[in-house]
Length: 164
Image (cartoon, rainbow, N blue to C red; front, side, top):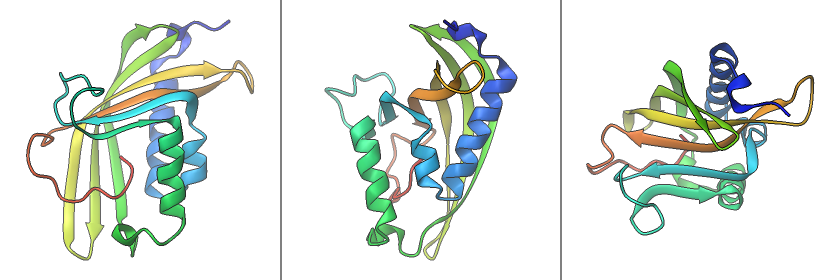
């Protein structure tokens, strides 16, 4: 069995860069395949509050992630007609430690969203819990959790109709 800390910085960076590229390209099936079955995706309003008892911008389990993707793929999601043009920059990647059997990775993300209404920057600190699952040589990386703490999460935000 591979331990969580066997995931090195370079491998973690490459995973995060691939995730960003797939999300920018709306390659949603490939992006969805990066998640574990027990995954949690969280964009909190207050990063110190319990998401089960306090409001979040997004607090999705694996089933809800799949539902959001299906909605985006219909082409009838009004908020994404036409689709946003997105470009992500992932920086400041570092291994923060281990949690359970997962490797905890921190980074900074900057997402430029271009729409007819104008351009919006979405910037925040991201924590991924990465897990090696069986498959390929030595296993494949998957996201067991992703938390995006937006810089402006405590202010009124424009509609976020895409996946961070």
